[in-house]
Structures are given as C-alpha cells and as structure tokens.
Length: 323
Ligand SMILES: Cc1cc2nc3c(=O)[nH]c(=O)nc-3n(C[C@H](O)[C@H](O)[C@H](O)COP(=O)(O)OP(=O)(O)OC[C@H]3O[C@@H](n4cnc5c(N)ncnc54)[C@H](O)[C@@H]3O)c2cc1C
Image (cartoon, rainbow, N blue to C red; front, side):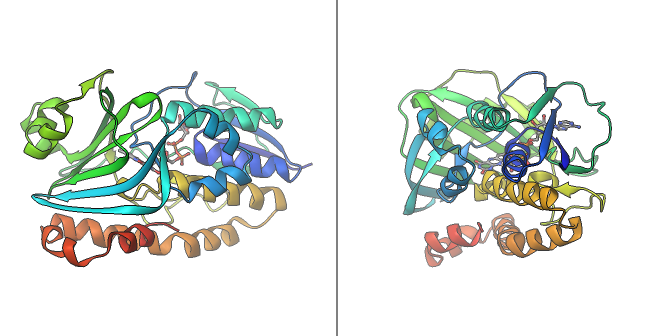
C-alpha cells in the first residue's frame, strides 16, 4: 500500500488526502496548528467549488453548516460601480468551518491526523500543502487583514478597489459579514496599522460598514507575494494549493484552486504519477486564471480600471479568473 504524507491540513491538504484515500493509499496529515482557528481570508466560495466538494464527499456537510448564499457581484472603482448577477450562486463560509469539515472528512475516511508535531519519519510520497511561503521581501510589502462584523447581511460579494489595494465585504454563515482587505505597508503605516481607520478613510466603505459592528479582533497576515501558477518547490514533492502558486485573492478562486490541485496531487501520489507530470497538468489548468489576475491587478494599479470597467462584461472577467 502506498504511504502518503500530506503536510498541511488546509483545503489543499484535506482534498489531497481524500483523493489519495479513495485510491487505497494510507494517508497521514501533518498540520502545524494544534487546533482549528480563524484564518485571514475573504471566505468567498465560488460556485465552481460545489462540484469539487461533491466529488470529495463533503458537499452535504458543507450545506449543513448553512453557508451564506450570494447572487450578485459588485465591484467599486472610485465612484464607478460595476454590478452583475452571478451565473450561479456563490457561498460564504468561514474558514474555521470549511477547513474543519474537510479535515474531519479526511479523518473519517481513514487519514491519521497529527497536529503540532512536525517531526515525522519519512514515507514514500509527500504532498506539500503548507500554504503561502512567508517570503522575506524588501520594498512596499502587501499585508492583509480580516474580521467578522454583525449587522444586516447582504447577498452580494462586494470589492472596493483603489489604486493601492482593496477590501472585500461579503456574507458568511449565521448572518455574519466578512471584511477582508489587502494594502501595502506604506498605506497601512499611514494609519498606524489601525485597520478600522484604513477602512473609514474611504467614503464608500464608511457608508457600507456604517450599519455593521465588528465582533472579533482583526487578524492579519503577510507579506503576500502573488506567485506564478507553479512556485519553485523541490522536484520530489507534489505541491498543491498555495504551495503551488498563490493567486491574487480578489479573484475569489484560491479555495477552488486548492481543492482542485489537492485532489489532483492526492490522485497523482497514490497512482505513482511522476511529480513532474502532475505539475504539467496543474500548469495547464491554472495558467489562464493566474495570467488574467496579474493583468487585472496591473490595470487597477495604473488607475485605468475606473475607465475600463463599463466596457468589460463582469461575467467575462469572473469566468476568466477561474479554471
Ligand atoms: C487576504 C486573503 C483573502 C483571500 N480570500 C479568498 C476568498 O475570498 N476566496 C478564495 O477562494 N480564496 C481566498 N484566498 C485564498 C485562499 O485563502 C487560499 O488560496 C487557500 O487558503 C489555499 O489553501 P491551502 O490549503 O493551499 O493553504 P492554507 O489554507 O494556507 O493551509 C495550509 C495549512 O498548512 C499548515 N502548515 C503550514 N506550514 C506547515 C508545516 N510546516 N507543517 C505542517 N502544516 C503546516 C497551516 O497551518 C495551514 O493549516 C484569500 C487569501 C488571502 C491571503
């Protein structure tokens, strides 16, 4: 029996474990954190994710956690608002719930889950699903922050862009609203890293958040580095999710990519497919969304988005930034 170690128990790691178990492998998941916890994430679950959750046998459990449902997408570029109805509804579920339900599913199928102890003996195949690299960087680094708010919940995923960064506002379970932003450190530094002040410095965000009140402390992460669809990793491992490549979060497709590449990594490791062949398949899958996200990001940074927004169909942009 092939013995597989999955390092990292996020969406990519759990999906990899479930796929490998389904092919008869013995799986151990090694997760750094000792207990489930909140993560910095917009917690937007794209409609395309549902079929992958179904394939992983996690759809019913996902539904039972009562994720918020989103019918519309609204992008704001300065004074310009672009809004459209999503082709299929998307969902909002906190990462605390999503990551736990996926890891529980892998454990229920027979994976051994080791939390906290990272020193484990070698096994035949290793899947790397440890998320983004913490990259030491010079210059104006990007940081992200997230919290949950209470108050009237919407039915749209909203993203407020300005040239330096952006803030997502979208519902999750239990009528809670997720607020998650990404800005360079010079902007955050201007407000003494007080994220409330960063948000309330924008008139449109002030208006949007006015009926809401924050119900947990801000969580923060960074620096963020958007990598290509294939990050430099050891040739011997099957890297999945953010360990393979980190896409700009405004796309709301990171969780989808993590589940898809995790599933592929688990199947490849269990079938003995060479890591190189697995990486080629991932590259084919992810190239377009990564390229489109990079171009869109540059357009926002150069300040053209406000002028181009009326001419770009929202559905088209949405579709091109996901597999
Ligand atoms: C600000 C922000 C907002 C985002 N918003 C969205 C969104 O709205 N929708 C969306 O689809 N995507 C979003 N994303 C992207 C999404 O969060 C990631 O793509 C997704 O979490 C990737 O899953 P993963 O399993 O690869 O990594 P992770 O979720 O990071 O999981 C990695 C796991 O590995 C563990 N780990 C780390 N190091 C080790 C180690 N050495 N040994 C063992 N375990 C280890 C960690 O504890 C963690 O549990 C966002 C990302 C950011 C930064």
